[in-house]
Length: 137
Image (tube, rainbow, N blue to C red):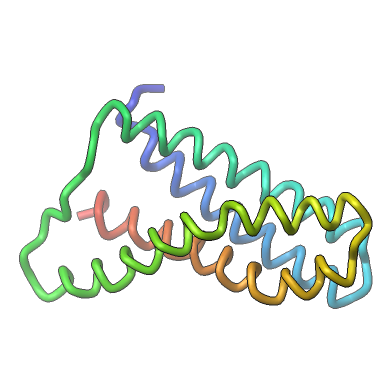
């Protein structure tokens, strides 16, 4: 694997993270707490792997400019800007969410998850879209 493989790896990690976030949501709605926990821990691990890979890639390559000067450019930035803001803001909230679950503070976990989960899944989905727009010309 070379550094040029990391963007695709990142998109795959985001894609699988999205799947496990959705599964975690489904299982908690069904009342299957154990499977929910497994899905959410898997999503957390995938997100951590993504963040590590993302930081390695951009420390080597730097910023990658959007290559197109057409109608897709404003759409790309309309997706990218909230993606970056929410991805950054999410990190401490995801840590708090996991901590509350770990400590058994499920009422507080649930209240926070109502805000964090939609943001987390938005970041995961838009991460794949950004990859497709940026690297799959």
